[in-house]
Image (cartoon, rainbow, N blue to C red; front, top):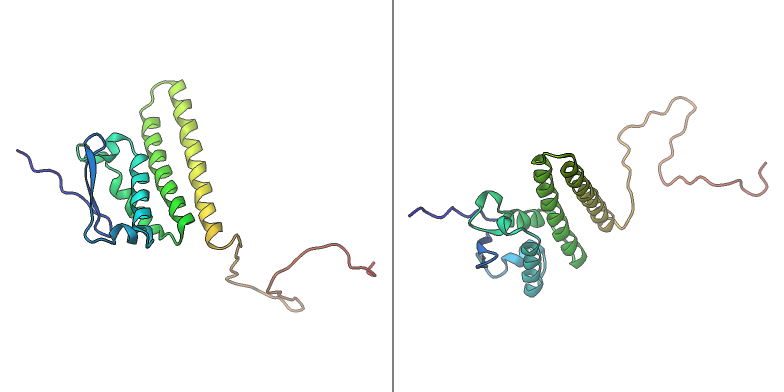
Length: 179
């Protein structure tokens, strides 16, 4: 009898065993491991978000029987790396991880197409997922910095007689009394 494949684990040491049909078992090294990944003090929320991750995966992507296609570890690992700060970010990073996996799945389908209608269908799906992912990244960036854009000037040259302005510059109309 062959030895089952060794399970990879996330940075928090969480591993998965099982299949969607037979049930998933989440093995945690300590009680707070899922809460650490999702950066929450609510264990029920962390468990629900883990289930949300699993629900987005195709059966082969969430199964011990297909280790080369297993995305369970990736999902939690990337969420841990994105370090969600609150409930909104937790939900958004789950969506981002799911969108990324779907986009890669779509790219795999696109690579295997042989007819023009297949290419068009898979290209359209891939393109929509890629745009959605870019929008999610931008949404996370805006949410994290309150919508403010910051510009950092690395180098400024001011010639003789010139002026450098540091701060907010607004362009407006004429001031009353000016011609």
